[in-house]
Image (tube, rainbow, N blue to C red; front, side, top):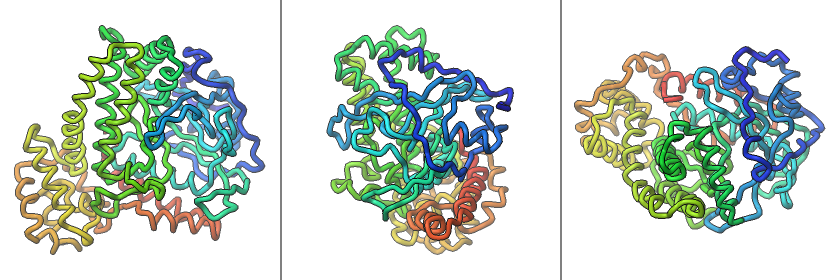
Length: 475
């Protein structure tokens, strides 16, 4: 196998022992048709030199990578699902396939799967993933990365030749197996499972592994668990703020869908806002709006409380509660930072930034049906440097109205970070890149009706152009 010199396997998860995962066999699929390979992500872990047949062998049949995990591992965890505790979950249609070091940063990254077959936690499920679900996830991860949201990356998408029956899609429908690259698969629910079984020793072991693997700077902290929890809280606040600035609704913010490194992952019924709407929901079954756009900070805080509760089995609760009390301030600061990043502006710090962010939210709301989420950020990227462009564009009359006077006034005195970005040809247009529901459906319709993958490839290319123009990925 021609791996590049930057391939650095490091299957550290094995050091946790047998209490945290079960070895499993991948499904034997009737077909393995490569539909998408993320060579940019592959280059970050030394796998870009694989030929297509080699790629399919590893990410369609899941033959082990050299010196990596000898067999896939279905991870054990519990979770609150719509705030109802479920001890009968775990990796039901996926597994941890490999762990590798990222070129340059040295971060440990995981290759995990979705739709790779049944596991001990599949219950009555078939362990499979619909092709439409895989396509939707590939689009979501590309768009979120472009908008600067910490996210898993879709690494590979392979069609598997099975006809699946689903209640929420016209069936039979096509099947796929997806591989994603992410920083961690240690979930809040991983700790909850240890607490459920009253295993304080396993919580301590998981804390030590997480600190040594993901937060080595906390290695000498006097109370590792509290330091870890505080760090996770900070990253969770930042993730939530970046969702909000991106106008993104995850849809299913269960405790098993949040991890210790503050990455967004596992995209089911997600949506991007068509316009400002605090009550906008992504999942048709979220009838109470528990995970609506405006309630996402509350949902994340609730999940952090459950994580603190699980960890309190092994450490005193008081310092965990003290850390929880800092979430509101951490989120408020992170939201100001996230919104300023999206506008391409250098922060002032303090209340000026908060006032500007509030003015931006009010302006978007006052724009009503005339103003969608992404066009606002496209038009005003760079602040007053883009004012002539914004006023001359198709939404210029709206921006010239009284509804935008406060925002334009508060933009005075804000400098643009890296103003060279406005020189990108992408900003010469008038239509920003969006990922709204109807566009996703159109991409899927071309595949479902004509097996036409050109719109999918074109959409990913346009998102890539937006990513390069924004310059937010990895920031």
